[in-house]
Image 1 (cartoon, each protein chain N blue to C red):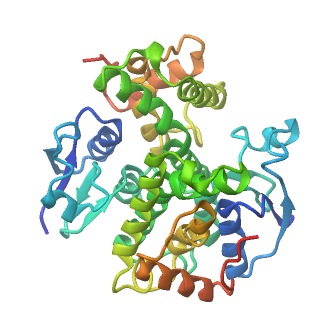
Image 2 (spheres, chains in turn orange, green; image 1 turned 180 degrees about the vertical axis):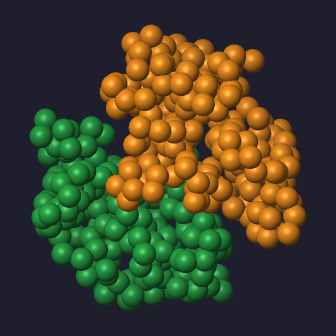
Image 3 (cartoon, helix red, strand yellow; image 1 turned 45 degrees about the vertical axis):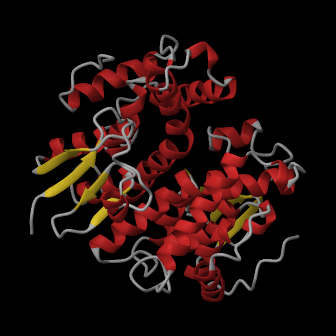
Length: 201
Length: 201
């Protein structure tokens, strides 16, 4: 058995959520910086570990690879207080994790990627992409109105997963001014994870 | 406690995977046909149950709603042989479930939707969409070469989730001729679920 390895790109919210979860759980790991923009996820060696060619990728203590950010979170946090023990709360946590990958990340993270890393003007983004990004942010704001965390009144993987790109939304030209509950929750989750506020690099 | 209700559209693979799982588990439920194409997922009553405006939506025996097809599958199948007991196998099952929603459904299902329900010619699909759909199918074919099922040598939620749109791929003009392991697995999973082969309506 060796230490967990995480192949990740520090500019990626999907990768950072794995780091935050491991840090929160006090688990030892080696972070292997692996660049998306410079092709390091497309080398033959990396594709042998993850045929999907994506980071994050964890190599577990038993040497076996595991991909998909939220699947890594669930595996690492099994049996901890980041996963609710009550069956319905746990199901809702999974609902948010799947929603994040299907209805939030493809818009909020993609807007950021296009503006910040491809150099596109925010005003030139596909209007449908922007509409869906705001739709996702508005839905989060609704869900968080009157609630401290997404599920069961305490920090779970749903918060860690969804805060990753929500806190970076301004990088994609998205304005959170209309979403006070979302902004308060971002600060709350950042506090719980000891992150400090996001500073666009 | 009342019976589980499933709001679903029978043309949707995401909805059918919930039906197949409940049938496989021998669980009683009421299916409430809810059309995506005729606006039934956008009524005020439906949005009160699922603010995301998507089917499938389950209303559990305790009356509480649960959305996201794969989250419903996980909740319904907890403690059954459709979820591996071995931690790594279970983690790989989750990897496939998240990959399905992020890297398979948005291409394979969307190609089908555009051709079959929006009346677009397959030859007019966005070439990037088609390339990514074939990328997802090729990755499945690779993973299934020499394997009967995706994880742990037996039927799990990963197979049920991924077979849903894979078996309908031809609806979107996608040709599975180059993927023999994928085709054999589709037939195998259909057999395990007592479905019979898919017949495009």
